[in-house]
Length: 92
Image (cartoon, rainbow, N blue to C red; front, side, top):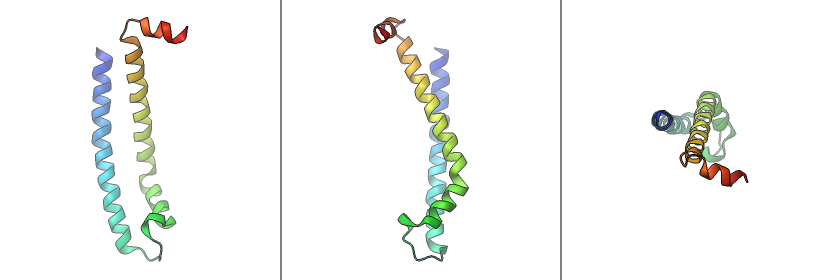
């Protein structure tokens, strides 16, 4: 029970951080489109992609890793929720 509460808290934290990051990236995209000096379209612009990665790359990686941790915890909780009956049949 304690693990599922912790997982739920991790998921809420991930959602909050993801929404915040998504808003910031959208703001940056709009800003970059208005001030860029290159002739590239924003969807294919390597300058935009480099700048976005430089500014947001670490946060994206951290959120990705947190999402993986949440996924592994949910998987582990699901396997162990049947008191081992499922895990025995999975590994035989």
